[in-house]
Image 1 (cartoon, rainbow, N blue to C red):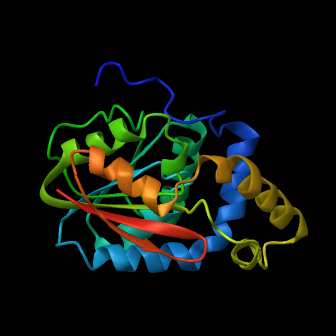
Image 2: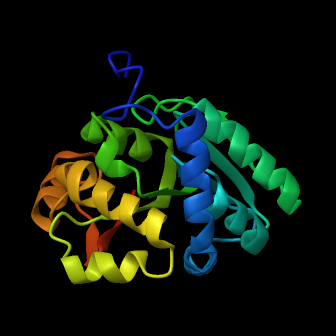
Length: 219
């Protein structure tokens, strides 16, 4: 994938103060990260090697390390997030290998991972088909991937429920971001299914909820 761009996200990457704000805002989703980690753990064997693409502050990867005891790797385009996530893992007392890199040019050999998860970031990839094919490449045969992201047709009611309890300022900022840049980048069920059909995976299982979707893929 030598022609992959150096920057796989639309717009500016989250660095500095923006990354720090995002880390504080999403820290309130601790229960959601824990639930997601437990659901993923049900699909893993002891000692599984898991890759999280775009882990941000690292909360999900850290929960996976706690729950599974397996080898967890995180790859993010943001150097700020790699630093923040590494510090969060140290404070949590778990081992997670966070690296800086490109989702469209994964710096890993073929067949290295048993499971891949990408949460709240796939919509930002400028070369999503290349990113999917890279996921397929680094998965072992029989491995699985999970993409969790925003659905384009989320309702106002669903968004209001999602930001409930986050404080007036953070809720207002999140609503603005969701209704502008994120909604423009997000996928419908049909568009994500069409993308998967073009990829090396060929097909996947798409599950919708009020605010987003889960895309389950298997190699």
